[in-house]
Image 1 (tube, helix red, strand yellow):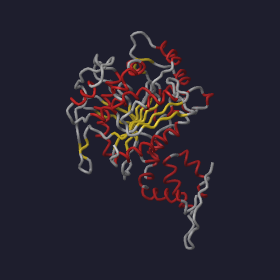
Image 2: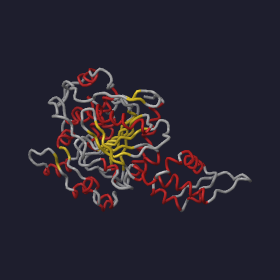
Image 3: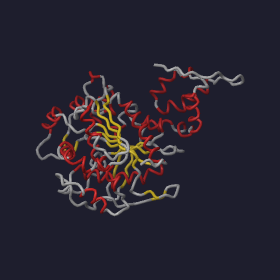
Image 4: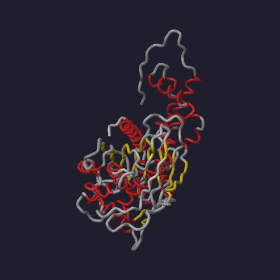
Length: 433
């Protein structure tokens, strides 16, 4: 579909744009941001006149950021691996986009967390099925984390306290260790003002826990405040005991403005998908036989993951190149997080954590999610738990499977979440929350 943009007449002495200027516009902005979009625009570019507001805007951005988008375009078509030491002598690993000079004001850093049985490569499965083109287009830096125990990231330290649960401890670890380390190591390099967390599937609970703690507790304050957050609620299974001191040895450095960057990071929003309130029993029945006695992890066969999480190729939801990557993207899933997410978590998450979250929340399920019911009632029940949040957006994505980011509809989802993250960062910068 082509949308015609009417334009004013050219001044008498104003020259028509040259082919070279059109090529500059295309090569400096469209193609580095998204090769597929660039190719689609190649044969239409000549219809964009010199006076078109769209053309004027793009050319202005090209001129302002020529060095950021043209100096090393090949490097911007891939993400680089990182390994970051934590304060407890552990490490967190993952993938990140290269830093861009001249960052824009109120730019967020997107920190992405994968679901069970995946890794950071979930967000960069192929050059086209990736968050990278959208990061380039909006100049929003993106970091995909290997969660604790996945790939080369250190597992959670020690055993889970009897008064707690796996997902609560993972959320505390995210809040006290992982996000502060990322904020300290990369915040100034990227020139960002805040963090937005993108969480899929089994990483949703830990994100909610971290967001609740971030809203209530400053890492540089007395840890007793965190005890107050936990103890003011009625006891629930697997939680409510004394908070330990295993996480969060604070550290700080200076930004260019002279402000301190501490572990108390600026959280501008959380984006949650692939997790809900009402599980589908049919899917659980397929997975339970795969769990061996006394096992700590479960391995899902690639063929089953294709059928459940991507849906069969006949559905048309997912491109063939993604099915060819299933085995490469596959990892074992922790049974502790799996059993907590479907067992204990539903009994405590709303009263203990969700109601304390203050930052904006974006929530989505696909219409054909294999694990969760996406009815109107179920969606409203999940979104309604965030009563203290400044803004809660929720909706059902039609035409996508559980692994939304890997589906064809994931292109629209990525466009939505990156734009939404920028909105939240600007609101945070304006002091709206």
